[in-house]
Amino acid sequence: MLQQTQASRVAIEIDLWLERWPGPRELADAPTHEVLRQWGTLGYPRRALRLQDTAVAIVERHGGIVPRDVRELLALPGIGDYTARAVAVFHFGDRHPVVDTNVRRVIARALHGQGDAGPAAKRDLAEVESLLPEQREDAALVSIALMELGALVCTARAPKCDECPLKAQCAWVAAGKPAFLGKRAPKQARFEGSDRQARGRILRALRESDMPIPVTDFVLVWPEDAQRKRAIESLKQDGLAVQEDDELRLPY
Image (cartoon, rainbow, N blue to C red; front, side):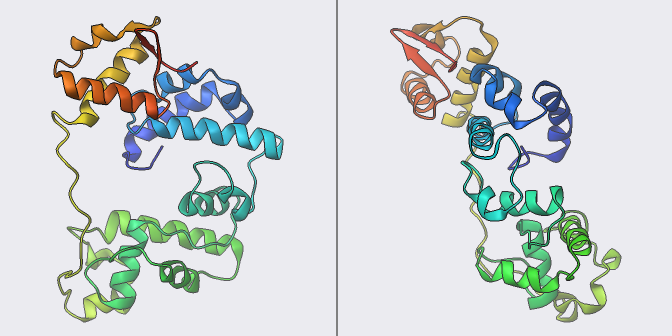
């Protein structure tokens, strides 16, 4: 849920989610249309489908118990390197490097004197692991601390260097805080009027309806003909909508 969604929004939704489906087995057995409805406006709704696929795999392969081993976590559908390591560290308290954008920025500044992190690289994991204490419990705390440091103190636009516990050892501060000269991620395309907005409007109509909706009715949801058709086709391809004859519905 936290991928590309603000923590303040997730904090509200996660409690409602866990009330309905407290574990993998409950989520695996849930109707998919109810999972999508509960996901609501968190954005990137394919994540809801992947989460349910992961729950099904946990039930089938691990008896409904979330595995602890990073390799077993990585074998689950929809689970990437960051998520697998985050589960192993923050749930099980194991010793693994957990690297996100904020951690990479802290490392780039503190160790390399760069204004920000460049593209992700394999060395990121090795560098973060080199900073972790050998004790599992201490390593997990350091992982949390690095993420919090990057999110709250060593921020991209307004770093609070005077509050940073690494200030005295920071190579970036020692170098006079040089500007970042590397490539930055491209800005996301405008949402207003985009295909993403069209998809969101159509999917919201499907979530709010208890019955299949005639395809022709979506002209009231999104008037632009070509864009509406593209949005409907992409929702079908992503498994977020099912068309039967001339009607559209959520997957069961």
